[in-house]
Image 1 (cartoon, rainbow, N blue to C red):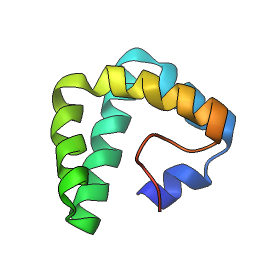
Image 2: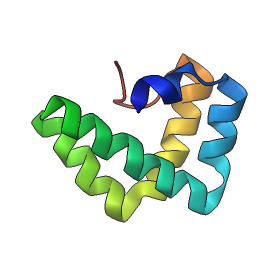
Image 3: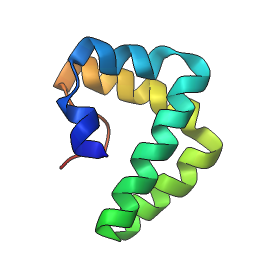
Length: 76
């Protein structure tokens, strides 16, 4: 799922992360799919945090996406 999200146009990724409820859903899907693929402890922590703070993490991801062209802790 993460590779598909990263293959999207940068503008589309920003739009998905800016829409309030949509960014929380996107964060949940991306963080949990990354954890299920990697089974790393830091990915598990981010997946659990995305349940409660997904909207805030989404806004952090928007800033990172604009600056670095990648999301916060979401690398292939």
